[in-house]
Image 1 (cartoon, rainbow, N blue to C red):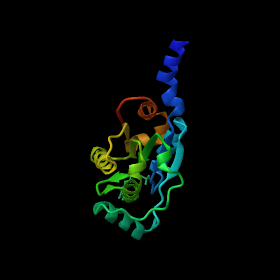
Image 2 (cartoon, helix red, strand yellow):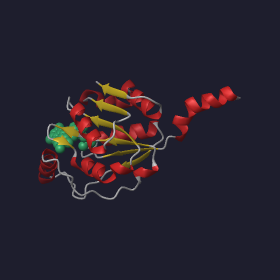
Image 3 (cartoon, rainbow, N blue to C red):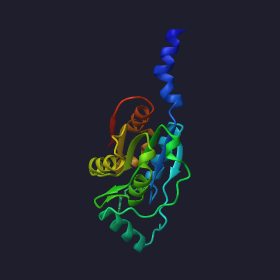
Image 4 (cartoon, rainbow, N blue to C red):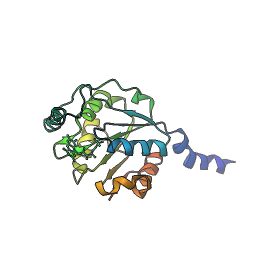
Length: 182
Ligand SMILES: Cc1cc2nc3c(=O)[nH]c(=O)nc-3n(C[C@H](O)[C@H](O)[C@H](O)COP(=O)(O)O)c2cc1C
């Protein structure tokens, strides 16, 4: 019986009781696809970040790049889920040469103090994910439990990528993982 209790502690507790939120910003849908896959696999709540001014026009694209370049934090809509209610918040962020997707910076500035543990993922970081994740950690004031960077060529088959499964395993369990889906 005692052995069973110990086993339950070791195995079931992180899986069953770890309340997880997956939050992300996605302009063209790639980050959203990965977020949904992660949330499904770890039974997490999903809460997209919405910028107050969003759009797919040329002007909106220019503004998005400019805000990333100057590290601005544009106004975002109030999230549906309160990150304080979760043991772990997984943050999905588009990263480019210009920098982090600005609405993610806004989210972190406003809510980092409520986050207990974090993990990060990005799509198509193209080698810039290390720097992007380091900036996110600094903004959060916490080291991520795990990180995942999915390369462009892996996106169509993301659901079957072993790296995504490793990432999910490591955020549900213990330890630090840095997964590169390439
Ligand atoms: C500020 C910013 C600007 C970007 N501009 C472009 C771009 O013009 N063309 C492109 O192919 N990717 C661009 N990216 C990279 C995309 O964000 C990247 O492909 C990402 O996977 C797409 O994420 P999303 O589909 O969730 O928005 C940009 C990323 C950021 C953060």
